[in-house]
Image 1 (cartoon, one colour):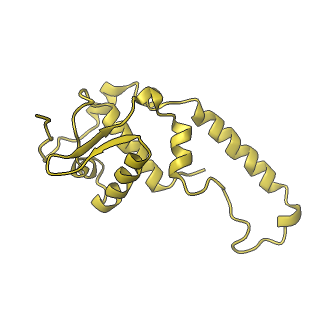
Image 2 (cartoon, rainbow, N blue to C red; image 1 turned 90 degrees about the vertical axis):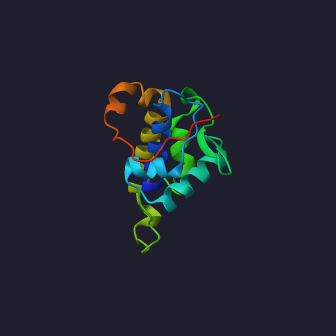
Amino acid sequence: MQLTRYTDFGIRTLMYLAIQPDREELFRISEITEVFELSPNHVSKIVHHLGKLGYLETIRGKSGGFRLGMSPKDINIGKLVRVLENSLAPIDCSKPYCRFTPSCQLKGVLADAVAAYLAVIDAYTLEDIVSNRDELKQLLPELSIPVLQIA
């Protein structure tokens, strides 16, 4: 199963925020786009969605930005994937319609595979996947944009 880029970038954004030493610091979309070489428009949509879901706290205005809205230990990866993905179905038997659909046993096999996949990622939190913070931080580029400081 392959996650959409939307989910991938959402997880990367949360990972980036989780490895920062000061979790109260506000970050800007431009920082995420520079670190991961992503489209600002795409990142804006993801940050907005993660904010609506409570994963991020977003603050509007000139001095605004965003930060984690909950502790990394409270962010379950399986739940996050479920809310970010439009569908977890590995195939769509209706487009084009497959004549085997009424009697197909592959659907059951794939449903079992998706259930097993979800069971594995349900066992992990954001805290688990950033437990190697120091190693992850060493892989980040030096930023050319100033980091927003809270007064």
